[in-house]
Amino acid sequence: MFRGSSAPQAGVKPPQWCVNARGQILGKREEVCWISGLSYQTFRVVNGRRQVTGSADMNVINCSYGDSGMPRWGYQIEVSAYRGWGDALKASISGKATKCGACKVHKSSFPSRKLAPLSSWKLGESFFDTTATRSGAIGRCATTWTLSVANGTYGTSKSSFKLNEFRCDNATAGRATVGCVVPWYASPLIYSKSRAPQLASHITRAQRSGLPGATFKSPLTRTTNAATMKRNRDLACPRDESRPQGKSCDEYPVATSKEGLSAGGQRRTFPGCSIPTVPSRTGAKGASACMISVADQNYQGGMNSSFYKTERMLDGDPYRVLIGD
Image (cartoon, rainbow, N blue to C red; front, side, top):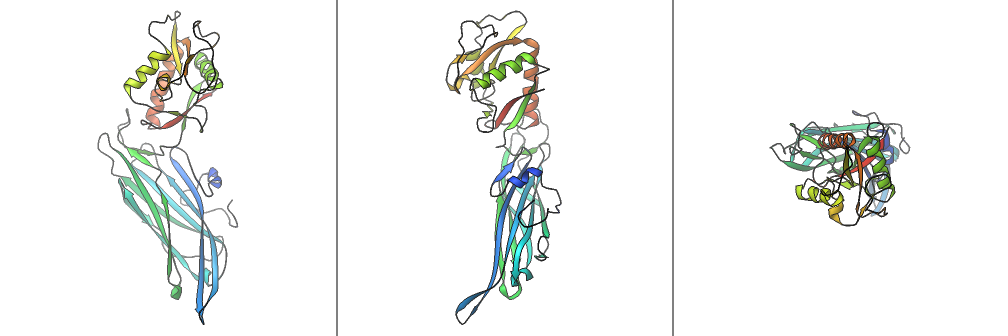
């Protein structure tokens, strides 16, 4: 699983995708992972010359996890020496968690343990409570593990690992409780093709024509600005435009995104959308419109509201729009 060492024995098992997080922070809406390295060396100075007496190379797994319905999140760190020799393997390692920002330390535990034997994992666990709890509050907090490697007369060496990935809030519409999420993760808003076939067809064609929202590289961005949402709707689906009986005008990108027609570009549509005066176009700018069933349109509205609430989507958060079964 990790270079030169067996799988970690964690308080909370890191997610499987954590194996891809070497040298980078990867995440989802309620968890992040980061794998880094740590090197330790012992030496003595003899007759003015430095003589290395040992070394150890370690894997460090940083895993932070929270819950959209809870004001607390955890930051777990695991360390394992996968290669080493000499006096370095006589050392012990311990850690302390600290914070900076809108939170307080609930618990921090990383008791001193020997580095040896190789491929043995040492676990530190910490938990933090947000202080962004008043109505409308939004808070960020950087959390840090400081690891101490102590080795008798060699003294103590320290290294720090920092994460600042969680945002906690009491500002999400429809949520009565405080919760914490990873705001930069573009969660998927998934519409069912079987439940809303006309909606699914429109979005599929809109994305294939080049409009954003389907991928992490080109997500949509949540807007809560009422004027922006109204302008998106009015430009993509003018009120004076006739609607076939039982149909409603659907716009994509959705009006609750900053990528709507208020951001520029031209209007487009597709065959069968019952908007004969608007041409088909391609490109990443603009918005598409299509007449779809009122039932599909109502389904979409309910899905959007539920998604924004469940994922704690605040203004400026990215998200993707996908079509499922």
